[in-house]
Structures are given as C-alpha cells and as structure tokens.
Image 1: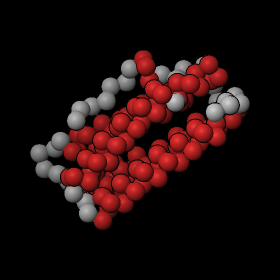
Image 2: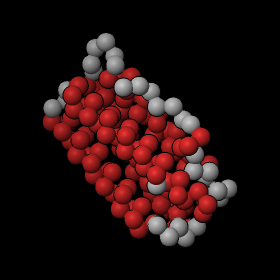
Image 3: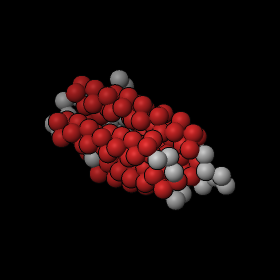
Image 4: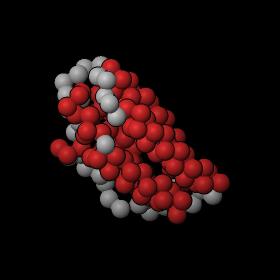
Amino acid sequence: MGAIMWRRQLSVGQPSIDEDHKHLIEYLNQLDTALNARVFQPQRVAVILVKLLEYTREHFAREEKIMEAVKYPGLAEHRQQHAEGVRAISDLSNAFARTPNHEHAERIYTFTAEWLVRHIIMQDTQITPYVRGVWL
C-alpha cells in the first residue's frame, strides 16, 4: 500500500468536485497510515471509516447535483455507480465492524482506493466538458 497522490489525470475541471476528490483521497491516505502503524488501532480505523463514508455520500450528492444542473446525459448510470460503490464500501465496513481486524481494514482500503481512482479517471472525467468552469 501507499499514499495516493493527486495528479492531473484526476482533475474533472470543476473546483468543488476536484476539492471533494482531494478530501476523499486524504481520508484514504489516513486509512493507509493507520494500516501501516506499528500498532493496529481498530478504533482509529473506525473513526476514519465513518468520516470516509459520510464524506463519500455528501460528495456523491454534490456531484450528482452538479451533473443535474449541467444536464449531463450519463447521470442515471453515474448515480447507479455511486450507489453500488457506497453499498460495497458499506458492506466492507460492516464486516470490519463485526470483526475489527487489520485484514478487514485492508480490504476496505484496497477496494475503496482502487474503486475511487478508477471511477474518477474512467467516469468522472467524462463530465469534464459539461462542468469545466462551472461554480455551483
């Protein structure tokens, strides 16, 4: 594992979406740090997970609102992908809540980091022509 670095390929071109993505990456980096700590602290991981899930839901709502405002044609499919991502992360978080061990926390990090970066690069950047420079 390693920290996720913000890079140009992750920019959608809409300031609030890009800032949200940077915050999500920061939460994932905090989780990575917690996983690599000398002593695993399940409570620390749990706090980060709650923040990550809450912020993810808030971000998706903001992003979808912007897509609605610019009449993005792929909104329905994008909304479905968001719902599936939240469901998967919630399921992994519930498994961690039942058995708060390093293995479950690592699964959350791996899935979420891969899903988020792939989603931003493959899906969110498709909205760039619609949202570039939009300040909502």
